[in-house]
Length: 580
Image 1: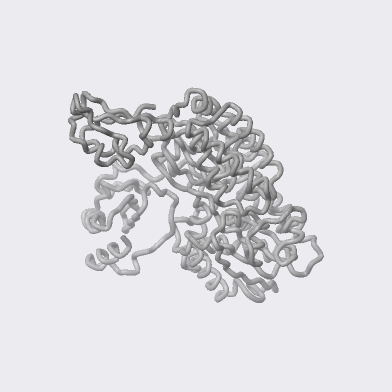
Image 2: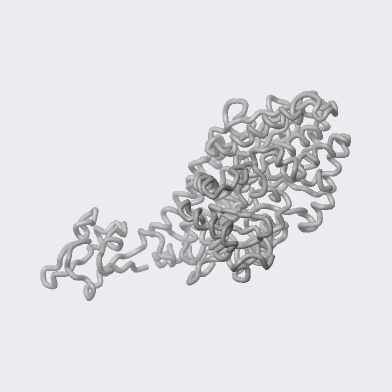
C-alpha cells in the first residue's frame, strides 16, 4: 500500500516528503491504516485500505475536501464535506477508553528516526536520570510502584536494588523481547513502533544498577522488530546516547542485539541467560539472576514493556504513572485481544480495568448471534475465566483468585462455539511441544495431562481422569523447575474449575456440547434432502458411505466413519447432518 500511496502522491503533485511512515497504532482490525492531513482540514483516518482504493481516497480528500468514507476524523472543523457523518477518534470506544501512556508514540512517529523520537520528548527521561544518583533513580521507580510487565509482577525497583547492591564490578541488563505467547504482540508493537523508548529504558536500568553492557534478546521470527531495535542502537550510538561518556555525564554503556533461536522457554529469565551463553535451558533458583546471572555476574532482566514504562515515568515523574492503576498495581498495561472478537488489537488500559470493559467495550465483544463463553488470559499457560466473571478487575491478585495470570498480556476470547476441554487440550499441546524437558514434572506431567485430555475428547475418558488431571496438574505446578512448568497446568485446572460440566458431558454422555470434538460427533444423511448424486461417497476417504439399493439414496456406516466431515463440506444440497 505504501508504494501505491507514493505513486498517487507523485501524480497529484504533492511533495514526496509529505509521506510519513509510522508504526502500528494497535488497532489491528483496521490495518492497513491511512491517515491524511491537509491545512484547514481535519485529519482523516481510513481503515482496511486496499492499494486500489488509495487514488480515490486521496483525490476525494485533497481535491474535493470530502472526508465521507473515513473511519474517523481528528476533529470537526466545519470545513470538510461529510464531517457530520464521521465519528471523531475520541468518540470511538476502541480509542477513548484507552490510556496511551507507554504507547503514546505508536502510530505517531517514524520508528526509524531518532530525530522524530527526540522531537516527541524522547530521551528526556535519560537526561533527567543522569542528573540523579543511581540510588535516587531506584527510589523514583520504587515510588512509581512499577511491577514487571512480563509475568508475575515482581517490583522493578527491588530487582534493581538487589543487583545494585552486589559487590561485583561487572553487571549486565537485558531486555527480554522474546515474547513467544501465541496471539501476543504487545512487545513487538512497542519495539517496532517506538524502539528508542525501549532502548532509553534499558540505558536507564543500566545506569541504576551499575552496568556497562546491555543486551536486547529478540525472537528471530520477528525480523522487523530486531531490525528496528538494531537501527535504534546504531542511531543512539552515533548521537552520543550510547558508548562512552553518554551525554557528557561520565556514564559508559553500550548495547548488543541478540537473536533468539525461537524456543518458548527463552521467555523464562534463566533460560534466556543460558541462551545467550550457548544453550537455552532454565536452572534452579535461587540464586536469582540479580545475584548470579549472565556469565555468573549480577544481571537484571526486564521485558520490553517494563523498560518502556521506565523511560516514560522517568521523563514524566513517578506521579504521572501512579495516576492510574490500583493500590497494589500502579500504572497501565498493554493487552492483545484476539480470538472471537470484532476488534482484535493491542490496547493500553489502566490496571484494574475490568475484563468486560476490555473485551466487550474496547474490543467490541463477540460477533452477533454468538455468546461469550470464556476469556483465556496470560498466554498458553494462563487460565480461562468464564463469562460470569467478566467483571473481574485486571490486576495480578484478582486474576490469580480467578485461576488465571496476567502474564505478558495476551488475551484470547472464546464464544459458545468453543469446547473448553478442547481449548485446554490445545494449550497443553503447545506446552508439551515447548517444554525444554530438563525437569521431569514438566516433561512427563504435561504429556500425561495432554494424553488424558485427548482420551476425554475422543469419548474414552472416565471419571478417574478428572482426578488424574487435578492431581498431576498440582504436581506439575508445585514441582516444576521454572515458571513455564509452574504455570503449565493453568488451562487444565481453570477449565476444570469453571467448566466441569463440559468435562462430564464428554465422559458420561459421550457428547461434546459445542460440537467441536470430532470423535464424539455423528454424521447422518437426511434422506429427504439426498438427491442420490453420490458426491459424498466418491470423496469419503474411508469408504464409509454407500448407496442404498432400494431408495437410491446414500447412507453412512457409523462403524467405518472417521468423523472427518468431508461429506458435510462436499454435499451440494446440504443433505449431511452433523449431530452433537
